[in-house]
Image (cartoon, rainbow, N blue to C red; front, side, top):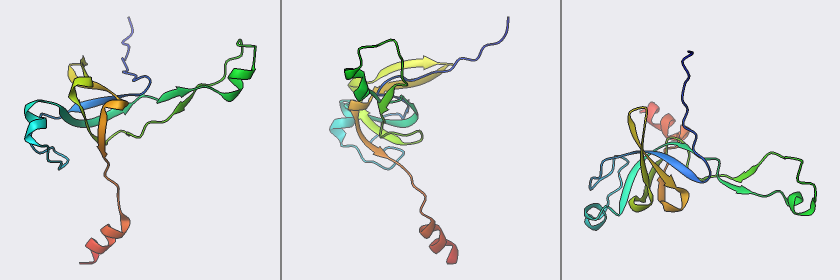
Length: 130
């Protein structure tokens, strides 16, 4: 029997997150208030992958009576991207294990904030000149 590779595909407006352990200060530098830490209201983690987003209908779909033709689905894209740090509502997340690794599936509506590192070539140039 051939070895088949498994691939985890996130659907809809969900985000696959590698969770960070709940501490007062996150690895991304956010400080969480003690109430959020003690009651586990918020948790942070790193985005592994995101779903395609919220499906939106084609305007022509409402006018056409022939539903036999299939067009490519369109989606309202997600703000979160692979590699972002997310702070989310813990109670909305679902824990899963895939290939012996722990992940959380978080709906887009539960995301409170994103941190994205962006490369600034001007800042690098200033640092290199010193």
